[in-house]
Length: 142
Image (cartoon, rainbow, N blue to C red; front, side):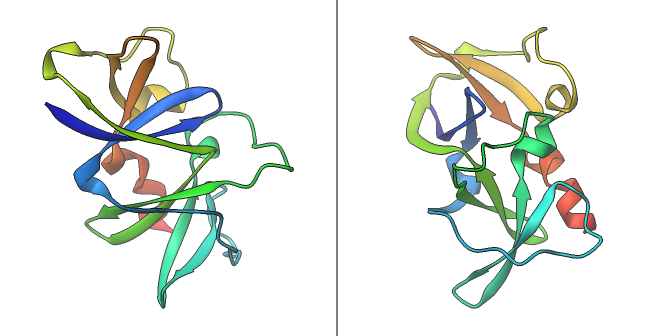
């Protein structure tokens, strides 16, 4: 069995392998980064550690978050250090069997097609598995 930390983004359910998640946080104030790529939302101070916050909606080619909704932070571990993914809503940790994994759906288009490794069919929904290594490339270059 595999464990995934889940979150919602633009009506979709995404999962990240639990071992890659450092922590989840409520909204944190961000400092803008001049001349950064549009996917880089800013920097947050995480107990004295400066962490880049990546706008996951922008990175996946989804419409912007409504102004009245504050994002949540999923802080992940990468080879370059910690990185915060801005998401709409934090979900649960779920376990899935390796046998229920499928290739990315054909209906997945745009940048998301390159950043989603595949999907797991759950009882009542589909969980898209985010490829963290590919997703954070833009932030590592910033």
